[in-house]
Image (cartoon, rainbow, N blue to C red; front, side, top):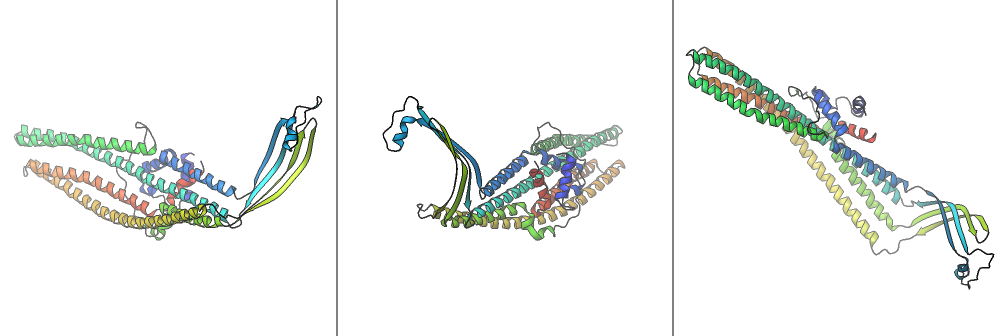
Length: 447
């Protein structure tokens, strides 16, 4: 499927505004999601599991209908055994008789188990519940992977932005070192000023490999999530982290059980377990099967003979004693139903707690990012002012270095704070769920 067709499918599968990553205005994020859907091994495995469960559901439904087959059989034996087969002495074959005979039949046979009490229908419905749960698992897996992949991409952007800023600082530090050196040569600065600037420049250079390592690690993490080799091409990262658009999740939170794919999976499994418990209880009831066939019988005992034949019949079975097997199956089904219901209750409680946590985290990290932005701006103004006063001979160079270090630390902290806020928004989208998770299932079904 081409990238254009993929995004058309995504837009059809989700309502307007549901593809939240598109609202962030970063083409690299869209490219990451595109690559994740098309190439991620985890997505491919989840899609294959859905196809497997879908096939099992079809097989379960097929067992409710008639089974039609064309059966042909043949057998041969010595002529001398014919009398023995009927309890009569074997007669020696005469010279003009064959030494062997053969018989056979060929018929069209139909068989069907009549679902008197709906046990088979319950099994088929449970299989369809399993399919719905598997599709919900695919959406949950895809949503988790999408969050991880977008997070890895943002890590890459953040590391790239911090590395670029530090490289700019190193270049500016080199220019500042030349300025301080000229002032020292003109007896306007002390040797301590020169040494302090050299020390500050060396500290910036020492921090650069760490940021380059973080950038490289983010690339490796992103490539692994996309199913690509370490040196494979990746979406080009943006120069800066995207700005978050405003979003109120109140509408999406009204129906958490529908929006969250993991809760949908737990609910479908609970329903499947309930149906299988009912099916197990109906195994105590009688069963009815009907069959019929039409075809030919033939034999050759020196002369080929054949005749048309047909048959019809039924079988009515009442279970009386199976050494407690049916009771054990019912007890097992009841235990599985209880476990599935408790799993649903646990998943619901965890989802509600996770949503509350995600909302609080997004709000608090948003406040932190705004505070760090103010801190950065104040630190930058303080550095500009200190440098101006130093050049005018009204401030010591140690004050310039202190302001410069505070500005540099605040700038790097702001990138980290904005990255954390983006991560919190991703977690909030995952906690709320939504129709955006259904797009990957529609693509997996078309494979």
